[in-house]
Image (cartoon, rainbow, N blue to C red; front, top):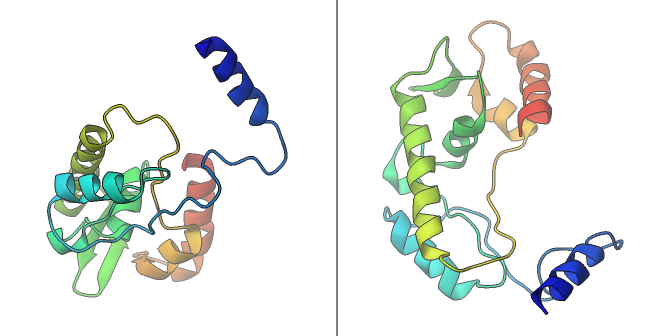
Length: 156
């Protein structure tokens, strides 16, 4: 019986307009108030069980915002913060480690909250335009878009 249901679900994925959530499902965009990822993920699972998302908790500090989360996913493009905002760095430093740590802890909290859940789960990240607007390059800002765009299309 389970094999038949799984086969039917796989066949529906090839239909035009198919999405992995039910009609009328709601989800969130990412940021939530607070500093406790376990509580935030539990709230998301309780309130949005059809299409949960990984909440961002920027109140925790540097690296917990949307730019920090996205930076934690970028391979070979370390970042750091300055008084003017985020910038690309020569090598991973404290701010990069914070972003990586926050993302890992958030994913652990989501896994605990979603125990037994099977379905779509949304994780929001910045796109190349947002990253280009929020992260500065040390040398030539004109290279910003091509560098970020190339990296995002090949690694995300």
